[in-house]
Image 1 (cartoon, rainbow, N blue to C red):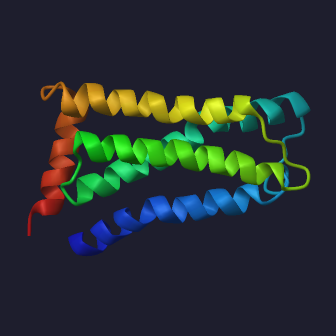
Image 2: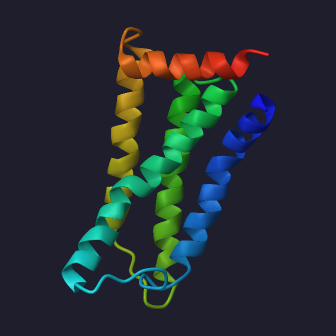
Image 3: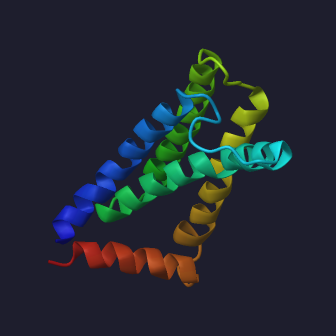
Length: 145
């Protein structure tokens, strides 16, 4: 069962990347539209702050599942998440009824950067932090046979 869970965690960031691509290939109101235009825009713009942070978080979980979370790999998956955010913004510029702005790309960058900072400040620099202990327990749990 742990082996299956490890495979699912490994595939999760890539499945999420596919879902992001599919969602951004559609008009912004294809899935949900709130009755209040201001609220609709606010929620959808706010999602930029978390969307690619989640992608980075899934990469971190995949690395933890294999016991390979090291600073260099952590930095690499952060860069991949940021780069994918930029690629997605370029992709959206070609989709009818979608917009692509540097502000959106900056929000994607901020989302990844905040979570990257949290992982670095806890996992790599503070072994006594609650988040570090949870991550280490998760990593150890998946290593056990």
